[in-house]
Amino acid sequence: MPNSIQITIQNESRASPIPRKSLIKKWVRAALSQQIQSAEITLRFVDAEEGQTLNRDYRQKDYATNVLTFTFDDELPQVANTPLFGDLVLCGSVIEREAFEQKKPLLAHYCHMIVHGTLHLQGFDHIDEAEAEAMELLETQIVTKLGYDDPYQAERE
View (cartoon, one colour):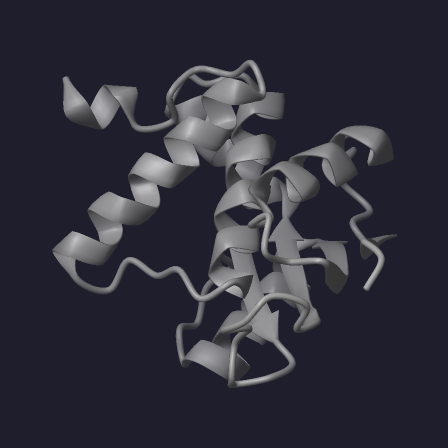
């Protein structure tokens, strides 16, 4: 099966500029496992109101969050050549606030959140400590390979 990775970007955010589409697609591709040969992923950039509504409706948490991940198939790809379908919803105002509070460059934080969400699409999680450590290590490897600082450096110091 030929490599067919389709990445769609929707910008519904009125307040926050988003990174260049070429960067966004590069970050998603970098976070995809080599076993993923076929994928359709949509990244939707939203304002806080939509982000809060989605977080409340799907996670029962009544606040806007940085990134939400929606997979279209509860059975995540377990074998090569199984298509991956899903959406990432990113709230620009939350990502901007976090970057400012954490004293991180905005592009670096966007990269981290997109890598983080893309890993979630593939079944990675951070519910327990062991999973969190494994996911953070993988995120760090991908983000630093893309030329940004370790997103967890401050937490490790």
